[in-house]
Every structure is written in C-alpha cells, then in structure tokens.
Image (cartoon, rainbow, N blue to C red; front, side):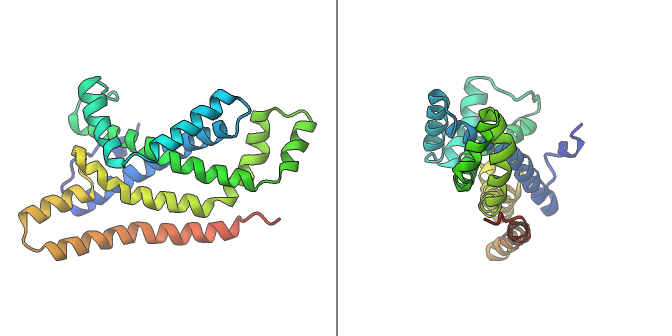
Amino acid sequence: MFDFLSDYNDPTLLGAFWMTVKLTLISGLGSLIWGTLLAAMRVSPVPLMRGFGTAYVNIVRNIPLTVIIIFTSLGLADIFGVTMGATDFKVQGFRLAILGLVAYTAAFVCEAIRSGINTVPLGQAEAARAIGLTFSQTLRLVILPQAFRSVIGPLANVLIALTKNTTVAAAIGVAEAAYLMKEMIENEAQTLLIGAVFAFGFVVLTLPTGLFFGWLSKRLAVKR
C-alpha cells in the first residue's frame, strides 16, 4: 500500500518535482479533511468547539510556515520522539513535512469553506431543522454540498499556495524541488539558468491547476 510514496531520494529534476507533487496531493487531501472539520467546529452550536476552531485558525495562520515545519522536526521528532511510524530519516522527514503542511494549510481551507457556508441562505438550515435533521445532518446533506460549490475558486488558490509552500519542506531535508535547486546552485555556476528552470517547473504545476479549477468553479457555480 502507498508504494508510490517509497522513493524519497531521487536526485533527478523529475524526481524532485515528483516529490513536490506528492507533498501537494497528500497535504492537500489532509488539509481539506481537517479544514472541513475546523469549519464545522466554527459554525457549531457548541461553544467549546467554536472556541477551539476559532483559536486554532487565528493562531496557526499567523505563525510562519517555516516555524511550523521546523517545529515538527526539532520539536515533535527530536524532543518528543514522534517518528510518524517511520524508521528511515528521510521517510520521517517526509511525513513530518506533510503534518506541518496540513496543520498550516487547514486553517486557510477552514476560512474558505466557512465563507462558503455563509453564502447558503439561512432559510435552508431552518427548513432542514424543521423536518427533524440534526446539526451534523444539516451540515453534511444541505450546507456543505452548496458551500463547496461556492468556494472552488478560493480552494484552488489555497492549493496553488500549498504547491509553492512545499518548498519550505527543504528546511528539514525533504528532497523536493527547492532542495534540489539549492544543491544545484551550490555546485554549479549557472544560478540564473537553474532558477529559471525551477521557476518554469512550478508554473507548469500551478497554471493548469488554476485553469482547471477556474473552469470547474464556473461549471458548478450555485445559481441563486
């Protein structure tokens, strides 16, 4: 299972960008799940859950991502011995980087989804409660499906930002694109050419994402 995650040390250009893609996809999925749960907490009728969701978002999104990534390595791994089930150092770094990216990005996903929840007419939630649906049922069956359709564009922006933020994982030795670029610049004299190649690589990754989600947003837009 997850055999496609087994290569953590491919020194080639394609291997480095493949690592970036893996970081983006896995962190994006984790951020979507955790961010949705945080958004549900923020609109929950339970004060404790609302307080936790609000505090988490306000604190995490105001901490630099570099600090969070380094904390996952130096704090969780070195001090508390959290290895994420890995025995290999490179695998451990990869998983800790995902943990940090998810923790950070989920705060922005939460706010995007919460803005979508606020676009759903209040009468729909009241009608759902009137026919006996619980809060969780109302959120799952009525509110969130419409909210997601309203925020495809903002979520795409978060995903693009996440793709670029994966470069921070180089700070803890994850061999993604920025890590390889740093090594190549240290060993070669063609700094501008190397920078241009990697910049083009990120454009190739992010531009189609923006175009696709832009089309999808128009396709699935909620007509009111």
